[in-house]
Length: 266
Image (tube, rainbow, N blue to C red; front, side, top):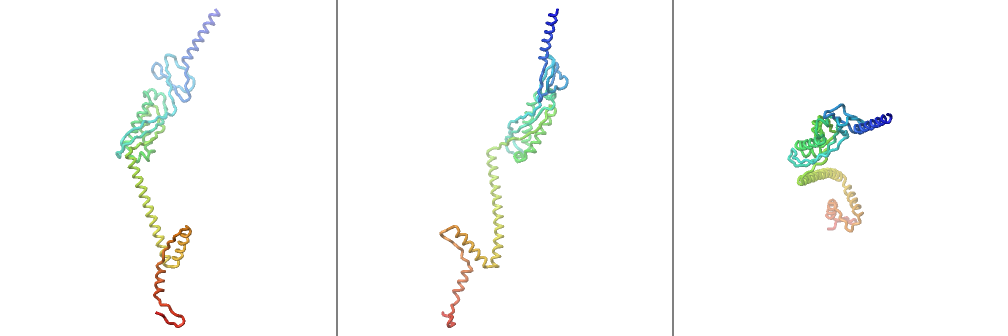
């Protein structure tokens, strides 16, 4: 009798262990468990840790709550100013309602991917090329709103959307390069002309100052001679002042006077 009782207890213990092994589930910290009992959503979402389900009756589906990084394939489109471009992006999203992500949409990852692609093409058609190249932050916000609106009903929250790269045709790249080169040349000419204007003003002031003080021109000439001679040149070219030529010409036209007789020889 005792042996039969022990055998029955052993059998019951084995059956209990088998039931617990079949019913036991482990939900990780970054996951949530959604239980379906006979195909219907049952109870609240199971939190992380150890949990039990009814074998053969309940089905536990685990949903990852970590942020998902999903690249959006490059989409080709025509901008509002009729430029063909290829734009790719990346979407960061996470599940905030595990039950809605399982019940309301068949595959929330695929749904978010398709919505991101269509929204990216829509953004391309509504934007100018300059906006795609220089005003990406505003486009990222608009793209995030377009994807997040339908994703709310899927239990998904869009964390961030970033436009990664904008590919332009080779002809457009060459045109932009020529435009940038022409703009740089224009700025260089403006700067050069402004420098010439400032230099001319300073030279005019210097000429007026030298006109009031003729000896300043001689001093400036001597400074130029010193600067050129410092280079150890074999040939030295110096400007000859016109005033000196006029002085020599007047000296030649004036007859020399003899100190002894006080007469002038012709």
